[in-house]
Image (cartoon, rainbow, N blue to C red; front, side, top):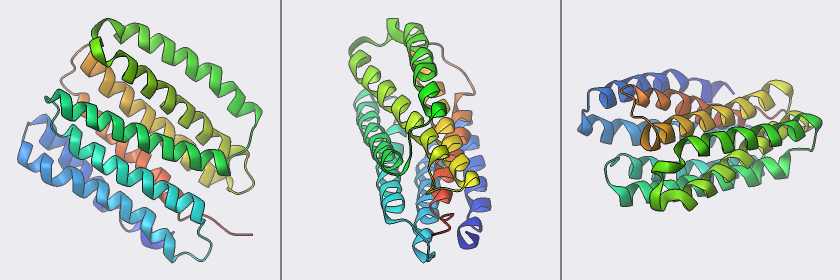
Amino acid sequence: MQPAIYLVPFIAIAVILLIRAELLNKRRQVYAIKPAATLLVIAVALLSLRESTWDPTYTWGVLVGLVLSLGGDVALMFKDNQKAFGVGLVLFLLAHIAYTVVFTLLGRVSPLAAVSIPLLAAVGVGFYALIRSNLGQMRLPVIAYMVVISVMVSRAISTLASPLFWTGQAVMVAVGAILFYLSDMILAANRFWRSWKYDRISLAFYYAGQLLIALAANAFRGP
């Protein structure tokens, strides 16, 4: 995993600068830094191709998700544009589907994963009740998104029971998915419930989650 680890400090610096730019509303800096930060995370996943034990299903699946996320990041930079927000939502929905497919193919059914399904469903229903009055025409897309991201998290947790992952690696996948989930919850709450001055802190959760998922591609130990 060593080559990929070298990129982590650069990603951390980029995210800090991105959050600062967002909080100060320096749009030109956001337009430059946000895609660059995501490209660095993509580079982390690409570096797994150098590992002799890399798993094609995981690496290529995660790369598809990251590339779709890059498109979503670019669309969501134009946060006041409703059409751009819709495009970003669709791209991230597809990214979550890509991750769900990967985690399903490589994960295993376990009691822990089974417990996560009703828990995530309860959280999703509660959160929907919180924001539904402000959804308008976005109601169905948001419901679909919440369902897909909840399934994605559940399938990520299923890697904890898979013999294809060692414990630390599966924890990276599960925690990464949960952080991604939290970042989306903060984003949705800010847009559809109550505006929060520091909502861009969600970017720290988002990039930490994506980075953990990408780093896991470099951690396969082989047979």
